[in-house]
Image (cartoon, rainbow, N blue to C red; front, side, top):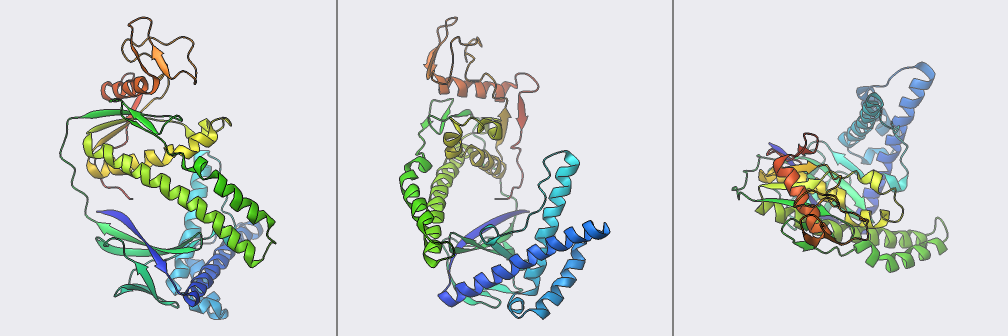
Length: 382
């Protein structure tokens, strides 16, 4: 079985929106109280607080505060689960020698969701609407049918809009019919990607296109008085511009990942170290605007669902080496967009040459350290 999430837009009336915001505020305060309790218990008594203890404290918290009584009991338990997961991730990073990242207190703009751990308890679909404990029946835009068995539900606030995310259990997907085709894909800053068959996908550069609108929105935000209603409206405008940019980018990347997983059995992709690459201040905006990390994640998920093989290869010298004879090009830098090999006479676009090298490394393996298979058939979470 696999888990898949279906996301739908909610349209609460003003009073329902206020109730949802109130539930979110109570959950945020309870989240911060749980973190504070764990911090003080360790600092003063060298004692760890278990999740079960905080769930019992949550029962007394709901009984003591009238606003908390409008929150479903299992929603408070989900908050305790979130705190416990944050600490488990912290201890895992400490043991692995990574940057720990101690769990933080959440402010108004950094706590945006609350959940129901069992569908049917506190939340359920009632006709064409979603019935929520303490809120009522909320209108939903059902843009596609829900598949599988609904297990959990999470309500999320993004840029002033509310969404319902249904986590459903589905049978493992059947692999697609084999095509006996392989492809290598090179991502770059000039365009979104170029494959080994010389198919180029131009990047719309959504962030750069929207920069003027975003600049005006941010300037208007800075002129507003802090804490005022006008500042809140200006902030929503900035958030919605960013949300629109994100949706545009993800839509294109999802379509490209779908295109390749439908047509090719093996897909070669560079194993790029994106956090290291964005340290270059001249290229960081262009790299982040392309969404390489999201594209890779979509390839991993869709290749697993389709039964395709995704191979991440070492990116070193994929652009600088000749795809015919392997000789390194001389006088090669980022401005070089067309390459010509003096040894074998090869002449083609830089990105096309790199995509061919990626395909060769993915299919032949090259050196033992150059390739790793991450897209074997199997279930995935999307």
